[in-house]
Image (tube, rainbow, N blue to C red; front, side, top):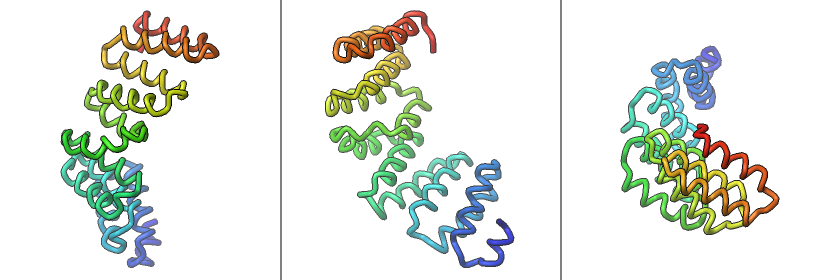
Length: 194
């Protein structure tokens, strides 16, 4: 990859792939150099900005990561991935009010259930935020059985065992075909299984 990057120094793709490869190998500082070069060669490329932001998080440079994700979002706010990455970055960086403002329209549309957002909240132990997202999703899509199970899991992770159990009991009533699965989860919650 280094040879390709050296043979075509003005071609962003090789620098980008080199950055990804180095990131996956845990060579974050070296990856930063390659991603920086890729970004200079192709400043508007969303994928480069996303990887650059992830690299910054891996280096514990949270403000830098937020800046990269903000740049990607500002360039294409209508692009769901740029919004989602930016929200997750804000959450990880503890910029909750900014994250909430961007997340609210997604929750209202039932699209806030992205794993990147849930992962950011879970990393901070903010399971009640995950509960809110999944409740909003179920309000928009009441026929989503899997969402009921995820909601129960979020309640359980938040320490609200009673709501987790109630959610599973409600799922059994709404989706009788899922009774066996719900009963199994109920037993796990009662047994304290994580």
